[in-house]
Image (cartoon, rainbow, N blue to C red; front, side):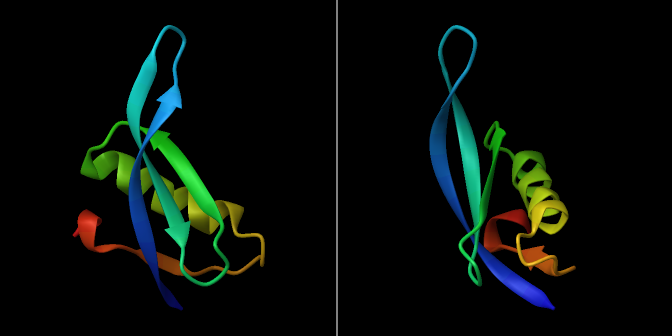
Length: 68
């Protein structure tokens, strides 16, 4: 199933300072994943993590406008 996700810019704690990062949230169950960086690669990594970590044990295809 194709599932739309929301991307938010966040700050994650690094070793010495906060790092600009992304949080991607599933529109179906509200599960979210985070990755350092704000590039398309970081967003795609979060989308893959959502598939791997799905709390409903589903094999969805996660997408968002920012990763097109």
